[in-house]
Length: 431
Image 1 (cartoon, rainbow, N blue to C red):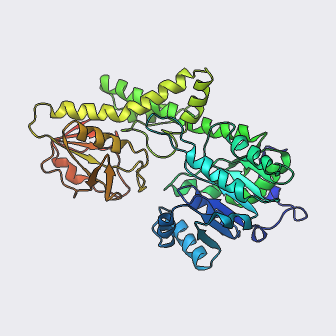
Image 2 (image 1 turned 180 degrees about the vertical axis):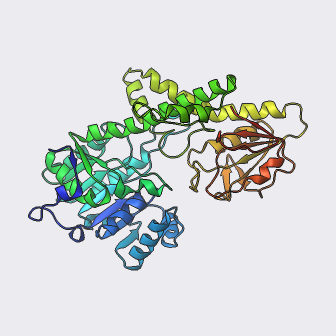
Image 3 (image 1 turned 120 degrees about the vertical axis):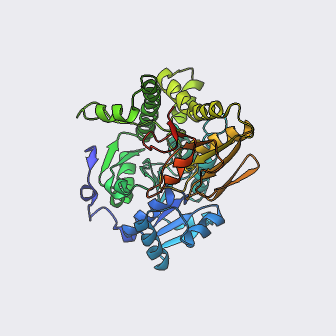
């Protein structure tokens, strides 16, 4: 097998169905599943979008889902033309020729992998599977999950992978809010349980990516995804440490990193911030760490990096508390609470942890974010305030959304700049 194949390489009219002949069901209409469903629809597949949340399906149908502008237009066209059907009924899965599983794989409050959503989705898919289907798992997960949650339960139903059904792992590569990283322009790793499984999975996915990279097994593809995001987490943790070292020496961390990245080989720039959020970087490495730890295998570099990532928001809280020490009724404003610029997603956001810890410390804390109107945390509801520095002793700037005007922060006595790039405030500080 050629490890790299373009979509054209995978087209054989004598052995493969056209897109219009293959109906695909996508299980999970979240940040991965919905764009995946849209991309499949653009390729010509009739698509079923399944989600257990009727509220989520209503949001999608109303055009309120978080998508790039061109994806919103494509979604509207597909819903209008009925090439994408939204449903909460799992019985609809039996009508699909291929099923793609794209559900969340979070961690719990102890940072232990929470496989309940994935296990539930896989159980549903197995229950409704039929002979001839191609089943592709895309959720980032621990190594061996494809085999444990799909291949073995299917076999107990009498459906053998590679003979009766075709099972593969093909991890998602979606960068929310970044048009330059569109799925169709990004290679896709596919690991089939057998060679025939790979061929069927690649045929389903070939129009949704720039090329397909074949690996020898589902387990190899699972580990490749974990390595991608563990690499990023480890290097971000290193950037945090360099930022603190730069501060001690009176240097600009971004200037130093920009200088280092002029080297045309063996360096990839990662930048410091107020913390790491989202569905991948602060979560996925634990799907590698925890199963190995349970087997008595310690990964000290990864473990130390994840500890650094976990502690990062607390460093900003400590600095803010030091700045307001001795002030009666201190007031702190957090600017930016989504996990990345331009995306209205609060999952694992470092800013939420900063807000929570300041609130628990007895500080009056507000936030401003034009993309996040309100959120609830530990029984307390927080509402975005108007953009004004009046009355605040300290502001913590976690991110800047595209086009956002922060000139009003000039009036704030102290701004702790978690972007490391924004010269605002009467006095600007970095960690």
